[in-house]
Length: 186
Image 1 (cartoon, rainbow, N blue to C red):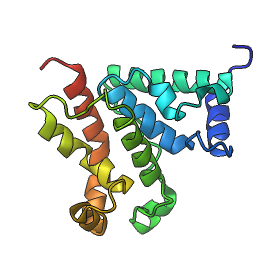
Image 2 (image 1 turned 90 degrees about the vertical axis):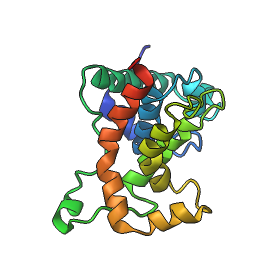
Image 3 (image 1 turned 180 degrees about the horizontal axis):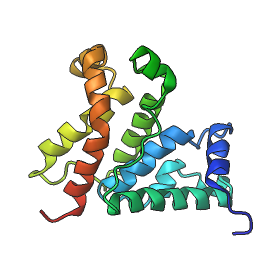
Image 4 (image 1 turned 45 degrees about the horizontal axis):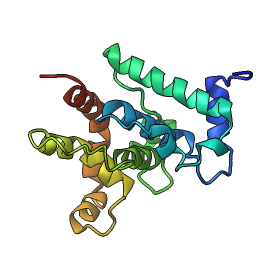
């Protein structure tokens, strides 16, 4: 790699490009988090770039791989994943979390859910013994992503600000639980 990107340069690239096959930095973090937490997704890089990895600069691909390794290292060190939302000063001042379609928490959830369903061979619900736990633990990301905007129950949840705030607050712990569920034998 002749010109590796710093982490800040990678984030700048992701947030300032017009390539339809590249997610912004927040959605990319959600995607990478899911690939580390969930069942193996062997083609995660191709899924991330929707089959257009060859059109993405090599130093960006390298930076994405290093970022994913850093997220995995956090979990292996028993450190919760640092989420790229929730510490917004505007939210702190008003006590409100932005759940609009343009918000970081929604973008992150979309990236996460994209990885969950990125490959049919990687089924998060395949183990019947854990399927209910996986459904409960991933529900916040499913609801916040708005992926199934025709499901009346999910839409009702999206309309309940208190429930959305509870879901947002549960994401960090849910990620750790999901990681343990998929990556330990107990």
